[in-house]
Length: 361
Ligand SMILES: Cc1cc2nc3c(=O)[nH]c(=O)nc-3n(C[C@H](O)[C@H](O)[C@H](O)COP(=O)(O)OP(=O)(O)OC[C@H]3O[C@@H](n4cnc5c(N)ncnc54)[C@H](O)[C@@H]3O)c2cc1C
Image (tube, rainbow, N blue to C red):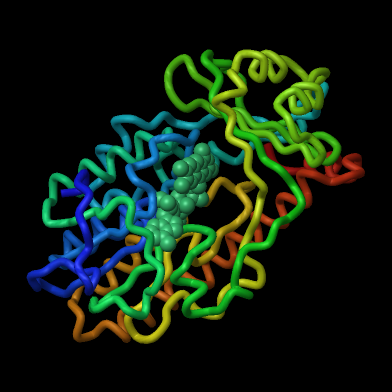
C-alpha cells in the first residue's frame, strides 16, 4: 500500500517473488511512475522515501504530448486529463508588454494532435499514489533514506532520488554532482487567473505565467541578485501588467525559492552494474527553462519499465536498451534548456529581441 510506512527489512526488499524484485529510491514523479510501470509488469516493488510523508507542495508542471503518451502507457492518461489544463496562446514579451514572439504551443498541438497540458505538482503526485494504491502490492517506506545502494538485495535498483542522488554518487562518484548556474528562481501560484500567459524577458531576468487551475495563475521568475520576496517585487515593479499584481497577490510565505543547478558534465551512462538504473533528476537534472523536468522523468520511467518488463533474466540487456533510448535524448533536452537560459537572461537583450522577432508567428 502506498500510504503506509513500514520498516524495511535487512535486504530492503519486499518478500515474495513475481517477475522480479525492485527497490526504487525516491517517491517523487520519477520514482512513483517507475514503481507503477514495474508493478504493471508484475514486479515486486519497494519504494524508499527519505521524507516522513508525501510532499504535496509545488507549483505547475508542463506535460508535453510525448510525456502524455508515456502517462497513457502507464495507465494514467485519464487521471492526468481530469486535473490538467491546456496551455495555449502564450507570448514572449518585453518588460513594457510589447510582444516579441509566439511560444510554439499551437504548432506543438497541431503536430501532436493534442495540446501541451499543465498540472499542479500535488495533483500529479496524488494521481500517481492513487494508481499505486489501485494496483496494490507496492510498499512505500516513508522516512527511509537510502544510504548504501550496493547493499540492497534486489534484482533491480532504481535511483529516482533527485538532484542530490545517493545512487548516482555511489556509482559515478561525488564529481557527478550538480553545479549551480548562478541564478536563483522563485515560483508561486497567485489566487486569480490573469488570462495573459507566456514569458517576459528582460535584462538578466525573466518572468513567466501559465494557467494551472481555474482562478489561479502559476508564475516563475529569476532574478540574479534578489534574495528576498521584497527584492523580487522591486525587480519587477515597473514591468507590464499583471506581473506586479501577480506578485502582490501571492503570499510570500508560499513562494518557493531555489538555486538553479544542473548536472554538468552529463553522466556517461544512466545504468550501472547490470542492475542499477537512474531516472529523472538523478540522471539528468536540468535547468527549468524548457519546462521538461517532469516530462523527462516520466519518459525515463516509461522507457525503463517497458524495457525491463520481460523480467530479471534479461536485465543487463534491458538496462542497456533503456540507456540507449533515453540518455542522448535527455542530454539534448538538458543542453537546450541550459542554452535557452543563457539566451533568456542575456545582459544585452537588443540582439536577442531582434532574433526573437524573426521567429515564425
Ligand atoms: C517537494 C518538491 C516540490 C517540487 N516542486 C516543484 C515545482 O513547483 N516546480 C518544478 O518545476 N519542480 C518542482 N520540483 C522538482 C521536480 O519535481 C523535479 O525536477 C522533476 O519532477 C523530476 O522529479 P524526480 O522524481 O526525478 O525528482 P524529485 O521530484 O526531486 O524527487 C526525488 C525524491 O527522492 C527523495 N529522496 C532524495 N534522496 C533520497 C534518499 N537518499 N533515499 C530515499 N529518498 C530520497 C526526495 O525526498 C524526493 O521525494 C519539486 C520537487 C520536490 C521534491
